[in-house]
Length: 418
Image 1 (cartoon, helix red, strand yellow):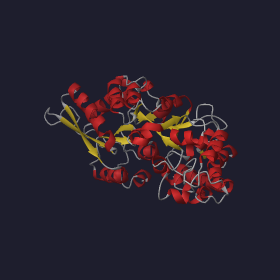
Image 2: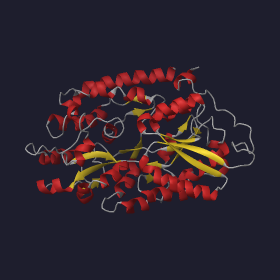
Image 3: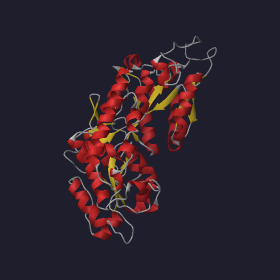
Image 4: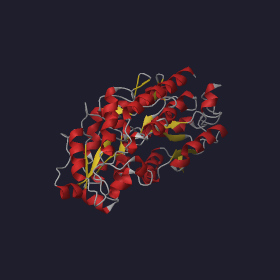
């Protein structure tokens, strides 16, 4: 019953493949058509090229993309799960993965991986771990993201501030932010923004603390509080816009419009940055500055198979292909995201030569997996009401973080006890 509640009535256990010719949903030996669920229109051209290559190798299988915008993707997916019309293969992220795996709506892949020697070891180990649940692999990575420090060279030059590099610490960021902030031009040195996916977490991890470890929150840890204080201190000193200002114009947009000189952002935004003429000309990238230690967050999407699919044999063939070198090289060449297969990222680097994108790949060495649990969204949503005041220049980040840690631990306990 609990599993049905998790996904609003979704199937509680994987279903057996439906009886049909070949057991994969074909009709009398005819062509099998798979549906493939995804949300990013920027990746459609690359996925179409991958599908064309796959279909050439597998002439009895065709793949049809089902594009659902991010805003409605998860709602649509849950509805289709209940109705038995979910895509055969679809994108999964770390935030939702454990919920779906625990709900029994994903096809276990461990047996397939072993039988077909799928090159899982060619993908970053932290990403592979993200898509395993209770010892079983349910998803295979297709790409990855890390977070870097984006900066505006023109604004740095105007203020005569040296560009960020691998030697930078939080003290260097603070000093630069002070020099770069120009009240007369309404330019801030840094965008210290609250963002559940890619802004707070890397700062916390770089502090030497953690967000989630061994089923416990790390927000109350002194080292993690140091990471949050690094961000809120710049709001308090006027070097970053307060959170209230970010509601109307997020940090990324302020960076695009050259109203902030530095911003933490994810590698997946490189294509959109590149499309802004000013940033293409003088946008820079550096690794995240060191706190108590150096760290960033790594995340990536995985391909999963619906446990309700009647075409599992064909679906697995597609997922297996997507985890291989050929598909990764095609994806990298499309430029929308970093392929996760080792040694295939050169095409992505060449697609935007003006940017020093290599930093995003180098940061894998000390990247920390995106923190997630079975009900990630429950405790993620606690950040906003509890940390909002501290990110609006009203102080109190230490007490807010400790309260967040306590409430997060309660949510995690309820999750374990469910």
